[in-house]
Amino acid sequence: MRMTRIVNRFALATLVAAMPALAPAQTAGLSIEQRLQRVEDQLAIQRILINYHAYLDSRNIGAYVSLFAKDGEWVNGSLVRKGPAQIRELLTGLFGNTPPGWVNTESYTHTTNIQIDLHGDRATARSRHLLVKRGPDGSPVPTLAGRYEDELIREDGHWKILRRVDYPVLPTAEEWGKIMQARRAATATAERPKEPK
Amino acid sequence: MSLVLRAAALALLAAIPATAVAQSAASIEARLRRAEDELAIQRIIVDYAARLDARDYKGYVALFTPDGEWSNRIGSHKGPEAIRKMLTTLGPEGATNTSNYHLVSNPRVEVNGDRATATSRYLFVMRGKDGSPRPALAGLYADELVRQSDGGWKIQRRVANDVMPTREEWAKIIAAERAGQ
Image (cartoon, rainbow over all chains, first blue to last red):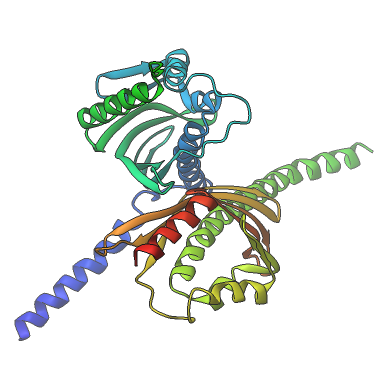
């Protein structure tokens, strides 16, 4: 019993000694203003991650492209798009030109589980995304779940995405390709003009 | 005369750093207030779902200003009594709720002095037939908020915009579920 008490006391003393070192480790030696800057950076980057899908879901291609750095990169498997022109082409290729005032009632994306690590004028971020699409009866159907790994850079005083890597998880990229292929085939069949009888 | 000028110059030099420090402190205070406001409003958005799901009606009503309003495409409920009455259709206050819950995400907060606007996404998840979670309703909240005299924030207006399903589709789903029971 006595030995247990001694061990417990030792463990508690070690924990207490370690706590101050653990808690403020990232802000040790920083001024109040520098600490405030870190909080602002964290909020600004959170907002970029959320704006990403606000712009993508509403097909606001100009605003979407502006989230990336001058030589920003978007990556999904072997698909790589670098720079504003290529990133814009990626979206116009997927969605075409969005008519003014168009409202997306067919899909949207939840952005969650945001983890941000700041390194001065650079940062890394990880997050989860869940694409929700309108099902046959109108109900929301979780369709695509994955994660992002981002590198960000402070460019002209504003945070921008330097590199975003999209890792699809459910379904896999191969499974998603099959789903999209089947969907396109079904749409093509539905749209084919019927033979006059 | 030159003594007076020298004294004035010295006073000016002494005053500059003090003013700069004061301005810097004011700037830091304003920036800190902005960050705190954003975090406080993000918390209100999450508290809203927590109190609704927990059937904490008193806590839910307290999130709104005395002239606060909740509305969707079906109707509007303004003031604490009307908002509380709307909630009682969900069952008794404080009842354990294992039938559904709200996921809230994607908060976008814009603070403008003592007023703010915010949007966020919601996904209402219901208990499915075998108990599995079934996403049932997805939409977008649009909020107007006001800073209170104690420095906290309250919702003056919340609009719940259901996106999937539409109101008509929702009515059909409910009718089909009732017919199948």
